[in-house]
Image 1 (tube, rainbow, N blue to C red):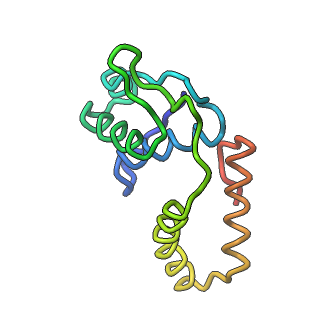
Image 2 (cartoon, rainbow, N blue to C red):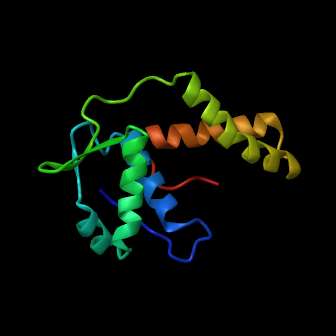
Amino acid sequence: MFIKMDMAADKPIYIQLKEQIIEGIARKELQPGDDLPSVRSLAADIGINVHTVNKVYQQLKQEGYIQIHRKRGVIIHPDGFLPADENYINSLKEELRPLLAASICHNLTIDEFKELSDEIYLQILNKEGEQHE
């Protein structure tokens, strides 16, 4: 698994790590049942605090992406993921709302927003590493 942290970014490290693991799952680079590095190992590999990795793993566990076993370690949830339910859809709406509001403030049209959304969605599915501009 390739994790790339931008220590100078405005986005907190734990959010970057969490988003990269979720994207790895979406890209199918991480499959159900795959092992993830231990908290200490991942922290050492990417040069961040163990508490940061632990926080990310706990959040991913709560959200159903991973399981944490005492003997087996950290694994991608072996049963896969449930389809989007009403709770997930409502949560997604809450997260998208400020992004859409900011886009409107920057005069982005609904069609331009949809085009960006489609482009990113396809990039993830096609396992493209970089966004095209």
